[in-house]
Image (cartoon, rainbow, N blue to C red; front, side):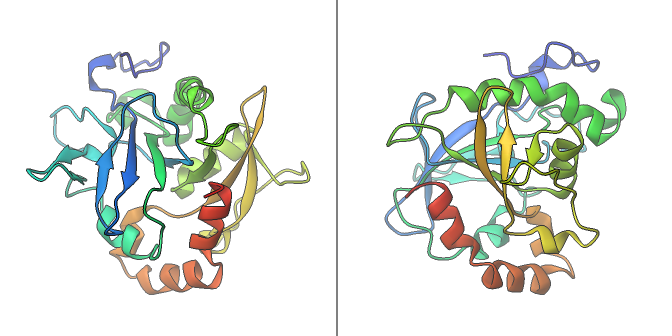
Length: 226
């Protein structure tokens, strides 16, 4: 499967991290891989592979399987503290994972907004291929400020009443906002979250509090119709 955009100036097809589908297990903490054609409740979009060395990142979040068969993200993806800020997700929740930008070489392909514009067609193609377990479309969760800003500038994100959405200066105020993502043929329900690394930095307390204040877990489950 080719996961790079045809127009990518980095010409890095073999380096593009492919999307993955996962399911939360009965213990509420373990995630396992699903078949590629499995239906999902949500699609979570993260920033990019973000790997500074030259190795290939074959899957989103640098995922790999443990000896027990569960999935673990790469050490530089900061997923554990992010998930800890999302307690009480229901076992059985199926989530598609993808990057808004799949290429790990930002300096070759331009600034982040430009790269997101180059990758948008591939992301939309993947999105429209996904189906919800109960029929219809999965909800979308956007887990990065720059990605959300890029989509707003590309006129892919808008408010539910159709008005333009502008990211607030303090992005924490965008957490939990419910928007629409326009593929050109359909409008998908979407929500803004945050980049996982924020839960390791000085902003962790602020973002955790905002997650609780906005009841983001409840909104996630409603968005995923689960």
